[in-house]
Length: 397
Image (tube, rainbow, N blue to C red; front, side, top):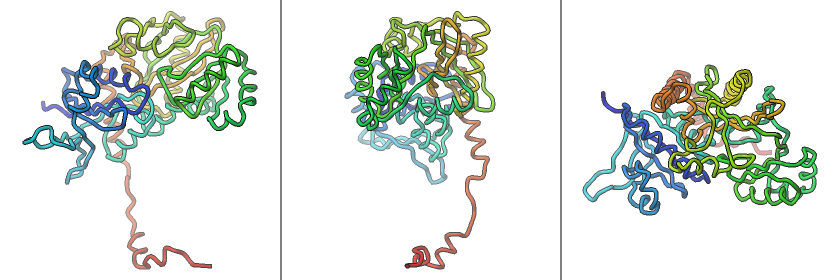
């Protein structure tokens, strides 16, 4: 059986760039024995699109400038039949022609910013390419913690109290914002609205720490939120796979960190496995919680997944009061680190099979979308052409 070209898209203009590289290389390695021919589509930190075999080897990323020089620029193009190709934009050798790869599907392995917020998904939609994960709406909602929580709360999903504001608001109404936040009582959690991997997240125990945390977070995002802290806190995560109409949860996990809230270092640089992404983090799987609490979180995970119009695979993070066992939705990761394969392995689904199912969901969604009416035949332009441009300008007073 001939191999199908699977474009693995990763990197991106994002503080989570390196994490995305780890996730992509893990996925490519897991699919080594599959029917897919994995073609890398690496988006550099400056936004260049590159491809080439050297991008498949993690060790080459130690010399990133050299790697970018060795790789080949590329772009999605349409051929004369309307088929989408990933085409090299420059010769890889003096006598060689740029290669073109017919696209079977795209495996999205971005984390954060333009790769995970719906922008890249919109490119795939425009080019009519099957792709994995949530669509434009679900991706953009998932990336915006403020909007995600507003939609969740409106649908009866519990969330913590929070105040959100933009940098211009902070400049003009700092005292008012602090007053609202202090009504929640310290400690308080400061977060960028549109970043993951705990980047820019800080705990503030007093006003001075709050102001410093806000100023630091504005380095990463122009939109922030300050949340009440759950105390005593227990974090529980659950992955979900499927579509808004039909999805299922994984087992739950309890991440372990050195601090009250998990830092970037806790997630990616603990456990002695820096090249393993989220799979290297310290955690208890399945989470050592009651069956009742497990079922409650799994139910909330699938409800939230559907409510936020997620698709493919996501990881949903919850905050649990360790005493009262009250559960609050924290955030959804529409492209979770390492694709949360470590949760599905405990649910008897191997990484390669998980990725295959994720790709199949994307292909099915693409077929269904293409089965709908995508154009509307009218003679509107011919009618307007008869009247000419003067008829489009309207009458003058």
